[in-house]
Image 1 (cartoon, rainbow, N blue to C red):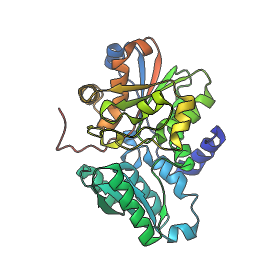
Image 2 (spheres, rainbow, N blue to C red):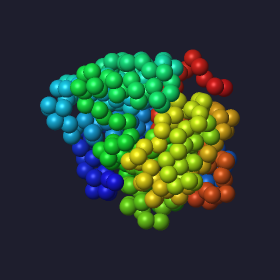
Image 3 (tube, rainbow, N blue to C red):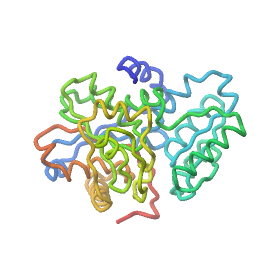
Length: 312
């Protein structure tokens, strides 16, 4: 489990390669939620999402020998693009196993940053099988999208920045998929401010983290039929114990709640975010009683959304 020192070291390591992203507020959304909301805008981040943080932290710690072997990963898009950028910055090459139903903007983002795509079926088993075969055939070095302490430490720098800018926050809400962002957020924020509450937000259509927490052991997704294409991954064996120990709860939201919140942010804040980001606001609006009167940080995880296929 990464320590606060690991996360601070990660931040110093990656600072030249990332943006310190803006934190926005909106009076209308404050009124709608009954809380004071602070949006950490990782949609403005390099490669369009928070993923550049963990990817850069990991790639900068690879040896030249590892880099020369080539780098491989599996991704629904954002990690693949971020990793491709981070590896290219060191002169290396990346192969990315991606589902064949990935939004075009994320496919283009991977390719634009120098990644080579290997297609798989949109199912966890297919992703794992194709990746396993790729690693065996090429001898490439795996950089996992979330099940890696180096990735987790890098993702934890988003909450580090947020709490440095707004140390009086009562609560932080983070999306949860494989768990890299949420576990990194927990590792940084719970050490920086002992009394802070941290919640995960998860789609009802891909609720493995919620059910895993309820049952005390990792459960598989029964479905991944969610508009949140970035939140379809399986909770990780490294991330789940951190979440189980530290999280204050995971809030499940429906597809309609996600879409409605996405539209609210687009219309009222005038910024482009993807559905996986808007789930944090959806969780707050669904459980207003948890957040009433509080200062709440929301991590808007990314902005890579297909503008030709908006859900509203």
